[in-house]
Image (cartoon, protein in one colour):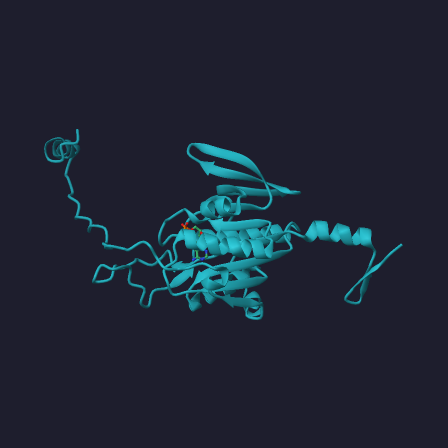
Length: 273
Ligand code: AMP
């Protein structure tokens, strides 16, 4: 009988194999720093973009759901480590720390002040997913600032792994995962072998609030700082934003005194009936 020494504990190999099989799974979660969903966005006076001065920034809501799902998988004993990645300005550390306060173990900030597009983000996430040997890669279905809904799909294609977008239920079963997806007019359940990319929909879970002791603990968790170049990705853009304009102001409504007047207006003014 052979024993293995790890730290100051002797482990009997069959037991060691059992532990590693059970606890090997690693989750990678992508979190984007975006304008808080409660903020009424203003367009800059010169129409070049959205005014971000003194605007509250938060984790993209779908990414918060992705973090919560990873934490639940960890609590269920399926996942042993959760790594959170954000690509953005230095301040995106706040969103990484926020995810750590919810339960993520480690963070990676890929720092850039450039506006990064889905393909650039997907290329960076691909390099990280491979370096980390991540088994479950969780993203939001879309970032609420640019509404692209592209990154998860591109990442799965680059990694050449399965993808389940718009997830409303995730169940890991050994080396595969069953994901229920919200599709037009119903639900679809797909089975993917791991590693796989999953993007979250609103009904997947309700994220918890961070507790104060966990916020304090999160400050001590490891956060690596990288640059896009470290992953061989250029953030130069081949897209030029021509113009950003706010939606047209809504005109004041008209009060009508009777149904007859309403019908008359719909027929003769709006000409819709
Ligand atoms: P999008 O394709 O831009 O709508 O974004 C979909 C998802 O990709 C988001 O919900 C995030 O999980 C991830 N993502 C997009 N951009 C970033 C970023 N800069 N940093 C980290 N994750 C991102």
